[in-house]
Image (cartoon, rainbow, N blue to C red; front, top):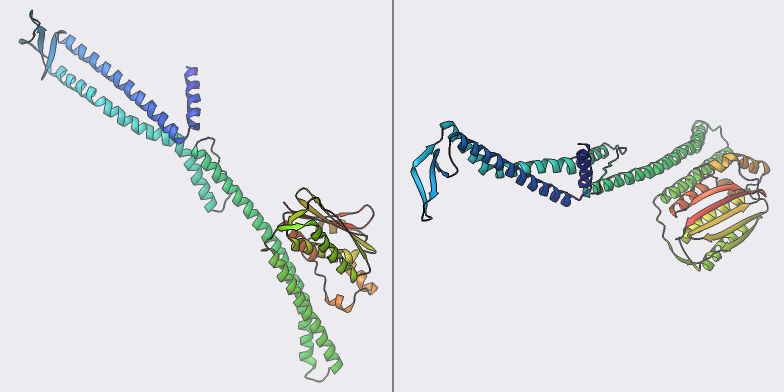
Length: 424
């Protein structure tokens, strides 16, 4: 009987992949067939029992049941007229009469009873085979999502509508996971920024508090000269400017988190002109030479020009800080990508800088110490505190524009920063 089991499993698998409507039709057709078959078998069994009762009570084939356990002779006379002979009536035993009535009742009721049973079984089997498992999976997944547990996978191996719903539900779960992952990354980035903000606020506030305490203690006693007072006030003013500058940078980087990229068609020649103007403006205030080369394959480029120029400005500011004689800019387009390379001829980047250069508030302390030792900073530059936000801003802007920011060292010496933008 293995072939029967294999056939059953085969058809069960086919019905499992039926649509809900086709599956219901299949169940109903099978149920109707079974009701007809069962009714026919029941009718046959009951008629055999009746024949047995007639045989036991010696009732011939010419007798017809007249009710109340009585059989009368029914025949045709010589003229072909049907005649009922009540004088030859045969009565069944009481027990046989009861059984006869029971058999009649079974024959009458078997079809509605089997039909009702078939409807019940179809409902149970249809729910069990087509609805129970996917509904259980969907309920479990919704409960998991309600508990903020997104690890539960709603997988249902079927090609029917419930299988499609489970796939859509699981796709939605994966989308929620991805959205939460992106949100966690943004929150982690914001946490780092907030931590750096709190850390950098501590120093100027401590300095200001120390000067205020000094003034409070010595000024009322007349132990402080006017020159010393002005020196302290100038120092406090410097720290206030430092805090104001720092708060502005914080406001700026926080606004990038909600920045919307506004792309439009820009002529390649216009973008090249803007890049050259920006480079010339920054070159005028420096002793370095900035060269620009562009390779645009399309006449028009779909991009947000303001974001590209903002990134270029930050990269140039960083390159001017480390460059010695010249800076090279290369802007080239490859398919739907725009690459912006900025190369300086400085000392290059260390392993730590290659890894952390775009981290919030990361700065090269060695370079700052060298500048101060060599006296390279002007008074304005001393006030323009380097907070290490330039490359972080570039990273955020590139990501907003569908690209990325990467760092490397040139084989000829110096650092190369590549800003990538999606311009499709």
